[in-house]
Length: 390
Image (cartoon, rainbow, N blue to C red):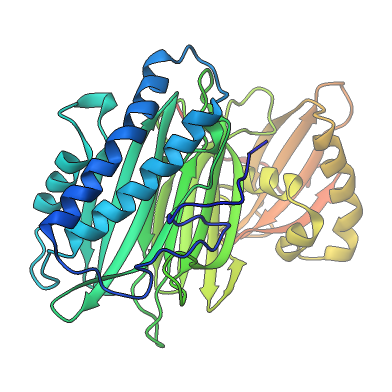
């Protein structure tokens, strides 16, 4: 369980509202401030680096290591603020800025021991984003800062990172962020995802969230957050994209089919103000749609069902069986000639019981049309199966 402290550093904690002294003011350019911020990194960086070097696949962190990670990220926020304060908003060289930050945050170390920094600018909205990645035992942690033009320089408007954690899976590994263009009202959002690191497995959890800038840069306004199981053994840690009104994340996770190692998951949401609504596509194939329909709670699955009242009982039984991890395998997948655009998917049980047949309409915008104990006679044109990821 994650440990929490009552006294928090001036670093953005997604679940907390700690307010740094620079929250509403643009930091003035100062070489002395940059040097002081860099010097403050040395002590916590040393503690964290020693924990990384001495780790023997232990997923628990010593309290001193947890404290040092928090202090290191707080010091990095101050350092980035100080360096960005000296960058011109209309002509920031992001490669030069990132390299300067890495030099200031490091002590000559390279490779896995080094703190990594990436900076990039956006045209719409005009924005500077800075990501810092910190090596921790069995993974990395990350923080992200966003700045908007304020006169000739930049002003921080959004900061986010993980709260204090006592186990390595509290960190943000494989962090990625996508910034939407402005909508008709001039608003933008940032979509982010990360996986929870672990020392001995490529099965993990992927967390994702959408934030908007708030009145306080260190307390961004959450739109929504979610998480799912993930397999990243094929180095797929999620593919994230956005437009002005949508966010979409695709990743690899477990299939209900005991003979199929994985499938692609699709999480697509329409973003409207402070509301997120899941929209099509919810799966990348008819077979995967059946999988998604079964594992989803009924209030969600009913939105993808043609006749919700008649399908609810079937869903309840299938969903309960999945929770008991009863072994099943997909069988034949066939097109239905009597209903163009409809696919029949067979699901077999390992205990020899009769198969269940699903009629799925649509192509991308899938809808569950029917669930039956017998296959339809006109659904007999075989379709290729969707392969699992390597």
